[in-house]
Amino acid sequence: MGISQEPIKSPERGRFRRSLLLLIVPLAIITTYYHHHVFISRPNLLAIAQNHIQVISGEAQAPTQYRVAPFRIAEEIYRIAIYFGAEEEAGTLILCYTGISLVLTAVSFSLLIVFLQRWFSPGKAVLGLLFMVAVNPLAEYMYFHQPSDPWILMFFLLGYIAIVYQKDIWLPLIVFLAVPFKETIGLLIPAYIAAGLGKTTPKHTIWIAVLMTIGFILPYLYLRLLYGSLENYMEDRLLKVDMPSIFMVNLTNLDGWIVLLLLFNALWIAVPLMWRKLPRDIRRMFFMVPIFFLIHLFNGRFVEARLFLPLLPLYIPAGILWLDLLYRKDT
Image (tube, rainbow, N blue to C red; front, side, top):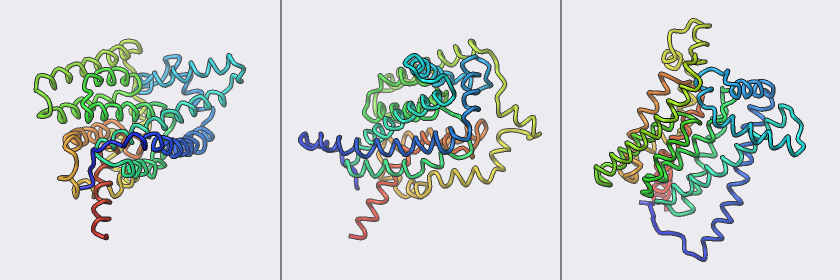
């Protein structure tokens, strides 16, 4: 119910894409403005610049130092901006990060539409996008400079698209490229295995999974050999406040559980209600979800909703189906 795989007819395709552009670009601008200017950049201008210098110099703590790619990209754009006459100051650097985030946000919004159109009509795919936009402010709560986040959301969406559109051969490259941004992309491997078993031959699934694993291990080990063993900034903070573990911090942090509850809001209910109606690939990829939560429970901060944005594309189809069901009951 509510699922359609019919493509948009050719005469309408151009108009639909132009309409999407008029929607996605303003939404990306609004999201980026509040994300980088109001909540992060303006109150933390000099601290962000200092953090950037630490990472570029190889002097930051784990795991930030191992996620060097977004800092390097921002540094190169910053140097280009200075070459063309921009001031060599923290404000210019922040504008570079803001521009990167704007582009990545627009790309991720577009990719989400592509992902949802695998099953839903264009209008329902846009509705799914609004689920993402509506909760985005929560992703700006209780954290400092994390330029990896817009990148890793994009890479997860590319991975989901490769899985549902059966473009498996791209998955090892996606994982390989994403690791220097954030090692969380490794969770795409169990998502693919779960979705691939029974859909392709076991040999094909195992072969792609092995290549994805190699694509994860190579940059992961390289970065740790390059920078050595580093103290995790979370463990450093725990020592200073005498807390036993990251797990205990998360377990006892009421704000973290509230933020997590609000991030997925009605989708917590929609998933079990619509489970049997969800596309097979989505149900299978949910195998990754408990692993994702457990890893972040032991090695993250639940209060930072940004960590869980890559899971939203798996929850959103249930929300679309539920709304469609409620609409049909009322008409």
